[in-house]
Amino acid sequence: QELAERGTALLERHRRAAEGEGSEEDVRRARQLFEQALQQDLANEAALLGLGDMLDLGLGGPRDAARASQCYLNARLQGSQLAQVKLCLQGLDKFAALLRTGAIEECHKDAF
Picture 1: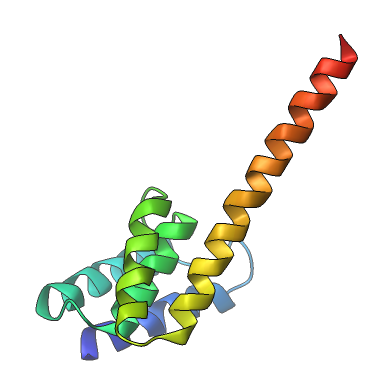
Picture 2: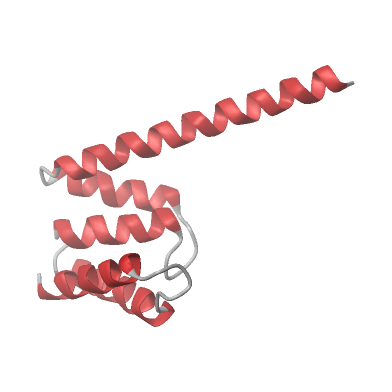
């Protein structure tokens, strides 16, 4: 639990920093701490949510929405309502992307 708490503190510090002032080292370290916490306890809710957020946003490494979803789902299975909200938001984001793609395709069809 201590590793996840340290990771959460680093991630929060990065989020609160003014744009361009957040430390990439803090972000990388937070991601490492979340991953280490999950090696110790696969059901660590704070680590699952923190790593999920980082994966979903591409912080401290490449963006991986599928792996983020897996983290959120595992946290949800532990009873996390916040994880349920994050899963719903991911679904809405995917739906919005589909709508945007469809609208763009329609615009291109109408242009020709």
